Image 1 (cartoon, rainbow, N blue to C red):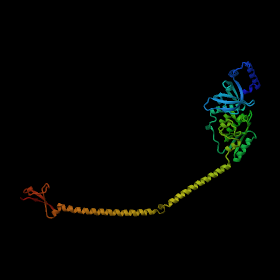
Image 2 (image 1 turned 135 degrees about the vertical axis):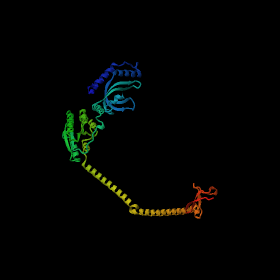
Image 3 (image 1 turned 90 degrees about the horizontal axis):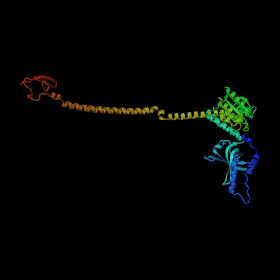
Image 4 (image 1 turned 90 degrees about the vertical axis):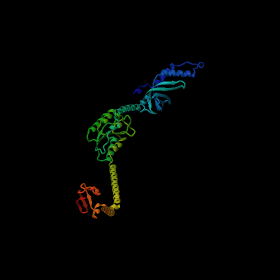
Length: 424
């Protein structure tokens, strides 16, 4: 690493002392320098120092929303000395995911002197985490690159089978992780079967062996799910499970993969690409294998619930049927017919009476009309012995002057008619 090649602290301090000695100013009690001039000279000396690599611990960190500058306080625990550091936000954002208060960092900074206050500060151009922090920074960069490729996307994750018949297990030989997975899984579902691949889980051989084991299990058609398990350890111990080759291998698996690496706080990159993340190997067994007792209890509860639902439905329908049977129309269905029959009979009698009354009145009116017609008819006059004389054209003779001697007339009487001739 770059900071491993830094010069020893004593060498740096010696070089600074030599530089300051070269820039010494001769003064006497009779010819002292003003404070402002001293401050200006210090600023000039510091300007000549140039950019330096500084190591320390971040004790204060201030990132104001919207501000383009981040303020730090860098402390040297050995000498109990602190110095203010400022940097642009983009400089700090490059390591913001792995650097926080309390972290040790190496900073490339240029010293700055604020003459009005006589205050020294550093303007940082680059920040690097020290030790594990640098390792975490590289892992964070790899994580972001893989995420941009979509390897961690939720839509590509495959669901676990409800009841796997054969489980592939990748773990260390005779490890506690293997024991936890096998014992917990068989305790939950005794009929479950395992295809175990024992591999190195740390060191230089870990990555190729784990990758080969995952590929072999994925190629077996009977394997329903693959568990990659390992106990806890340091960041360096868990580093193989953040290897890019392993991540891409798991991403290409057609079989669902469960990551069970370390303890709850551990978070290798395998957790992000796996279809399911388990906090521990024991948790992996619980997530992959259903508990037979819990399933029996769930079935019993569902059966009781179904029985209660059916019983409630039958009770409701029975009450509805009893309510329907209690209605008068159901208990005595002919009662309504009898009532309607009486009403129909009454209406029929009323209609007959009305019709008879109408006929009687019409008959009476017809008789009166007939009597008036008969009384006014010429036939009634003819019955009394009168006759009507008509000319040949049917014109009735009303005046003797209308006829001439010898003219033939027709005489109409009550019982018929006959011809007559006028004498004079």
